[in-house]
Image (cartoon, rainbow, N blue to C red; front, side, top):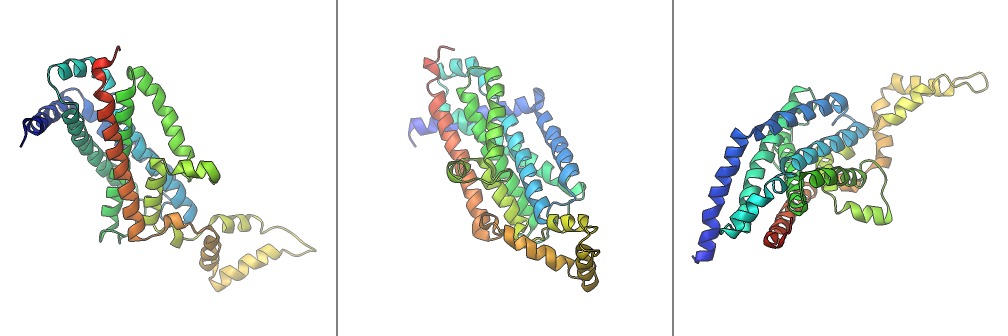
Amino acid sequence: MSDKRRGYFRQIPIYLFKFFRMFIYMDEWKIIPMAGLIAALVSFAIGKDLFVNMEGTLKGSLALTCVCIWNGFFNSIQTVCRERQIIKREHRAGMRISSYITAQMIYQAFLCLIQAIVTLIVCVISGIKMPIAGLVTPFFYTDILLTFFFITYSADAMSLFISCLAKNTTIAMTVMPFVLIFELLFSGGVFALEGVSNSLSFLTIAKYGLCAVCAIGGYNSLPMTSIWKQVVKLQNYEYEGLHPVKIFIEELERDGKVEEFCLKTAESNFNIAYESTNSNVVGCWVVLLLFALFFAFLSIIVLRRIDKDKR
């Protein structure tokens, strides 16, 4: 093994131990209960219909995806810019930027995994009705846990890259809301996207996270209840002395075909992007992992220029 490669591997545990000491002694562990709190608030708001009907699954999946992205962003948005001068001095003293970023990615993976576990535990405790069988693994819980992790980790890597670019923590925290808004708007879960906006959605972490959660939750196989609820609200509509909508409702309820009606209306909202297949979920996971690796690579490139930085 060359001295160059040996130096790379020797420095990784040095910085990794440093980050874990910071986790314990500088209160960075507080991001873990914060992740649980955010997950609890979201679960309370959307948990009733998540994985129960089509509309609730779409809204809930988007909300959980945003929770994961939020967690990932806050993990590393200030990590580099807050100790930029220290990194510059250590780099001039022989620190390898690639070793530093690799150690960061290992440490951030630990944080993201813990946050994904906490988020899943909170969802279970809050009473969200979850399927049992998984698509990729035998269990739904394993599939959704891995999905939470990949979403959080890719967002974490993006945030780490922003932290490498930012002059200081103020700029980093200012940029973050705009990135979050971009992720939300172009996720495909809020607005119907077409043309250029649809193309931009393929650049977002939220799109692939949303697709994976919806696919695992069986979005396309669930009933659509919003149309039925609207029909029920119109049951008192009168036409020529009759109540045709009420008669229609009573006949469906008498024949036990309300569920069939909801499933039929759901067919018009079938979305191939949310198809519940092994290949679809794995494809989303791979893209999310590639996002993480891509931003880690960019972080190394940007941070290597730190000696030329006048900041």
